[in-house]
Each structure stands twice: as C-alpha cells, then as structure tokens.
Length: 341
Image (tube, rainbow, N blue to C red; front, side):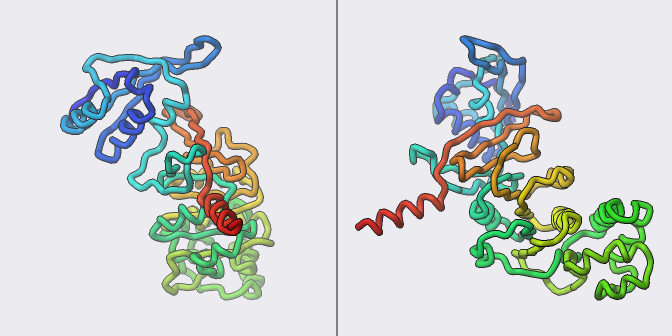
C-alpha cells in the first residue's frame, strides 16, 4: 500500500470524483485534511487536501483514468457538496432507489446505513437487501409491506442477545418502577424466572412484573421460542408512547440486520440506539434533519436524496444533495404513458 495526495484540480470533473469514490470498493482508503473555511466571491469553500492509500496497481489504474497524484501535499478549495460527494458513507452494497433528475445517472444509497425517509416504499426497497429485518409500525403503512414482511405478535425476545436484554430491562425499569429493579426485569426477559402468559397473572406478583403489564397486554414483546421469520412486521399502532419506545428499543437491540421504524414523529429518546448500522426511520413528513444521526435522508416528496459526510467529531459533517426521481414515480409515469395510447 502506498499513500499519495490527490491533485484537487483533477477533481473538478464529476467522472473523476466518481472514479475516486468507487476506488474504495477496491480497497482504497481516502482521508481528508481540513484547514478551515474560506469565503471567495461570496461563496464558502472548504480548504482541504485529500490523501489516498491504496495498492500501487490501483493508483496506476486511476492515473490512466485521468486522476493525478503527488507525493507532496496539494491543498485545494472545495465546494462543500463536492467534498461531501467524495466522502459520503461508503458500502460495497449500494441500492438503486431512482434516477437523477436529468435521468442520466442511477441514484444509489449505501447499505448498511442509517436512513431517514418519508417513503415507506423506499424503506421496503432498501430493507429487502438485508438478510433479515424487523419493521415496527406505529404509523400504519401501505399493505404492500405485507407482501414481503410477515406479521407477528410482538418483538420476539429470542432475536435479542442476552446482554442486550439487560439493556432493554434498564430502559423498561427506568420508564416504570426505577432502574434498581432492572435486574429482576432482566431475569424475566432472559427466561430465568417463570414465564408469564398474560397480564392477569401479573397483578398478584411483584413490582417488576407490574412493569411489564402493558407490554404483555399490547403484545409488544413475545416470549415465544419458535423460529422467527426473516422479515417480521409488528403493528403497534394504537399503543401508548411507552409501548412504542419499548418496541423500538427491543428491535434496535436485536440482531436483525435491518430495523425499520415507521412513526408519526421522530422520537429523540431513541437516538442513542438509532446510531447502530442498518436503521431506517420512516416519517410522514421530514421537517427537520439537522443534527439527526442519519447518513442518508430520502425525501420522495421533495425529490431529493441527502448524503451526509461525517468529518470526525460530534456535529462535524457536510451534506450533499441529489435531486432524483424515485422508482415508484418512474413506474407511474410509464404506466400513464401506456394508458395514453
């Protein structure tokens, strides 16, 4: 592996930026050195240099494609969206969700990632690329979700590792009878005490059991030990906010590769758990996205995909916005054209 500085001038061409970004799928590592912001002709630029670390053969291939490198550092002034397009989250799996507004490029999103969207269909499209998934629905989404996901009663405890059940017990205890009872609740969740079958049984037992009363009544958690479906849908619409928090926490602590949460609002209380990989949060309308822990924000209503590039440090990021046409819209347009004939 060798390290070289990328000549900023060659990155003025979009195709070169695509080559550089794609090189990460062949083992290249790209680092940015930031030197602050500069104002030029009333526009804000970021002064930076880019370093690529890769096999020498890959560097030579990139040179043939038009990129230029040097051993000495070369700084440049980058428009924030250009820098973000180079540094946005990378994954070997990138899922097509539509085409660019000019219909010249396919728009893809990385997976696994942390995604915020106003489109249940986009969430469904992305989730099917995961080996397994769980969808917690507090909103009420379209029936087409059930063409892939199978409905179940509650989040099965057998998909939550033992250590994560202890974390879930703390969340339940904190919101009910106090965290000092979390060990007792954890024993129930881990099956170390007699299994509870209904909320009627709880009234005659201790406070830790009472803390689980609503969860059992609404079938938020499932104690069943049967082999669970790869794509599980749990409908909790109509339950309390407490039940919503517990269902989402259980799903986010699970070993599922994808966790989809559809809800009428964003719940900041879930934010520490939302920082895991493989999360899709579906909202009816995205009104605020600043400082939220998402790598990609897909707004079908606005026709935009925002890619967030994290630069290190809390709150240090830049955004890159692509205008796009969703696959759903493309299908509708084709259908309408056929109907016109």
